[in-house]
Length: 210
Ligand SMILES: [Zn+2]
Image (cartoon, rainbow, N blue to C red; front, side):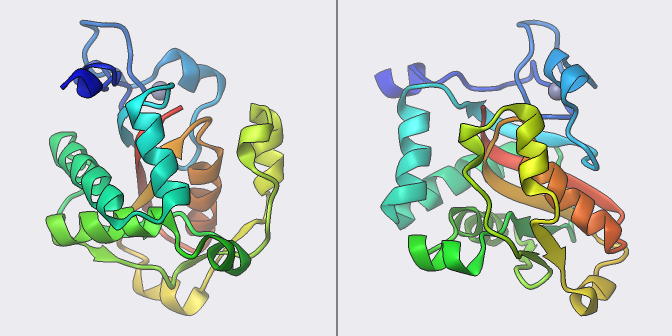
């Protein structure tokens, strides 16, 4: 309980566009100050569960990323699934796409934490998880070391769609799943790649908003 109290949960006072929390009592807003500076591109809406600040939630996300702990993926997946339902982010038939790692990245880490989350959410919300459509084709320096502008440049051309698979999803609604959304550069670049492949409707959901 003490732990849960130390998490800054994002509730009804949120930005529909980027999923960040906004001032208490302002309710859901269509755009927030951080969206005005760096709006997530090609994304219609986003939801996140809590702020990625120091404390228990950050510890959980880090243990998901580096600890290969399946039960953490389940617990966080449960929270995110609940948030997706609460914010009406995924209509029936929505396709879940975890933000991909490169093959080398998966080899190094042993798994993709975003995919672990997506699998749990897919199971709970009965939504299909598609990992053949979007690939990360180029390794990139860790985003955390870069400022917002550099984050965008860093990811240019880092993702690609399988055109054969993309044909099947031309009319689909896609929900990108990630562990953390910071400036939104990663989900935006994923979404841009999907839009280029002809996919029309893209949203994003993450556990934490950095
Ligand atoms: Zn916003």
